[in-house]
Amino acid sequence: MNGRVLIVDDDVTIAEGMRQLLALEGIESWATSSPFEFPMLLKRHDPDVVLLDLAMPTLSGERMLELSNKREMHRDARVVFFSGRSPDELSALTERLGATGYLQKGGDVNAMLRRIQFWIRERRALSEARTEADA
Image (tube, rainbow, N blue to C red; front, side):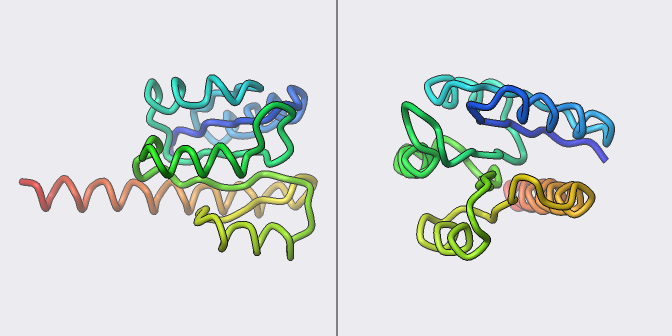
């Protein structure tokens, strides 16, 4: 399975580790530690999934998602919170802000990969259905 993932995380070590993990699965990925590059990378790469860290120093992941939603920047990409916060807190934020889901940093790597692959398939199925409907 191929797919495209954008990682937005100020911890370069975590972002690079995730990129390497995704590469082993054949998933293309890009990473940025700058929330200000986020809109440009969304437009350039049209990712299937965006892994969005919440604790960014200059602009929080929560705020980036709010701005992205207002401007409809991420189209139908699956925006997923990627954080070390507790599952209860991540679940509440996901629901309140309309993210697709969340992944907890330090969690089971295989489970994370399965969820990312699911979101890639979900996004691709939606894109195909729209293409067929437009034809």
